[in-house]
Amino acid sequence: MAADYSRGAAAATGPLLVLGLETSCDETAASVVRLDEAGGAEVLSSVVHSQIDDHQAYGGVVPEIAARSHVEMIDGVAKRALADAGVGWGSLDGVAATAGPGLVGGVMVGLSYGKAAALARGLPLVAVNHLEGHAVSARLAAPAPYPFLLLLVSGGHCQLLEVRGVGDMSRLGATIDDAAGEAFDKIAKSLGLGYPGGPALEKLAEGGDGSRFDLPRALLGRKDCDFSFSGLKTAAARIAQTADTDQDKADLADAVQSAIARQLAERSARAMDLYAERHDHRLFVVAGGVAANHTIRRVLEETAARRGFGFLAPPLKYCTDNAAMIALAGAERLRLGLASPLDAPARPRWPLDEAKAASDPLFKAGRKGAKA
Ligand code: KG4
Ligand code: ZN
Image 1 (tube, rainbow, N blue to C red):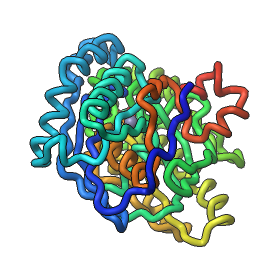
Image 2 (cartoon, rainbow, N blue to C red):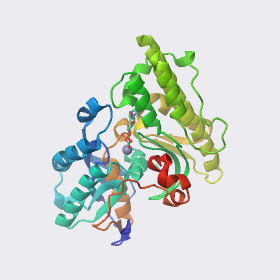
Image 3 (spheres, helix red, strand yellow):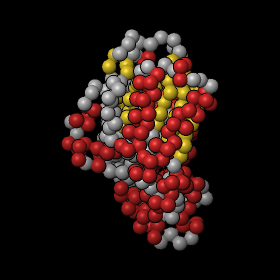
Image 4 (tube, rainbow, N blue to C red):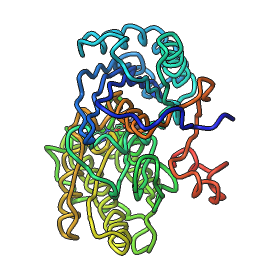
């Protein structure tokens, strides 16, 4: 396999204009981001075509449908991102495309498009880890100086990471079964809500009072920073069968949302304690689709405040999948003079902390691998 990044040029100076492409799941997205020399990011355009309508009938993302839709959309979405930003191909300093982890058929579409554009226009290519995109997403709207503690919580991932710099991270904990977003989606499905379930469940929970349900508290008291949501999912699915009225359903939705928020806060608090032993500058960042949930943002912000951590979450539109975060991750690499070869592979699995993943017996075959 080709090296992920090589030092193709000296570290870039001056503002950098990068086109980002994102096709790893069910959003075809493109964005132009400008990174100034001081590290400030400006999103000049962010186009996201959601395939939700294509997948809704199936209650989840169908990989073949996703890949075909990416093929149909990518050229138009990329050109619209350039037009919205008011820039031509000639003004760009590089192209950044998600190269994994994700549904490989979709990843290949965006990555191949990025390679073709880079080759045709003589631009450097950066093959971006989708999770690194989420990791930098809070930096799209506010300065988030390295290092920081990151809770990355989305439909496919749930992990706590110490982020020391561009691509320099170690994992403090991860889910041992489902990701939090996956739990939201599956429980929402058992409540008869559409896909994606997270936003629908949040809305339903607004009119509910979950105090009447006693849902399991996974891994309580454990000293590590791992997560588990499968027990909650099973318990909630069982209760959902007897939830007859709209009020029952709203109450259960509220109980589920609170239970997920509580677990995220408990494990994050543990990670904050570990992190604080090593770093004086204490910043806690939450990113990924589940970070769009208002209750979860509030509970995590309170947890951070109690432990003397600053708190940062991306604006809602940059929590769920987008290409602005991919463009920024690419620009930060180009700033250091790092680019990818044109034969960079699409990687269905690509852990952020490769050292940890390599030493983890669960990684290769276990479910933890796919989620971490
Ligand atoms: O980051 P993302 O767009 O895709 C992945 O990389 O996985 O995250 C999508 C996930 C879905 O599971 C969705 O249900 C969840 O984020 N999500 C939410 C909310 N908005 C999106 N979960 C809870 N509350 C929300 N408001
Ligand atoms: Zn994502």
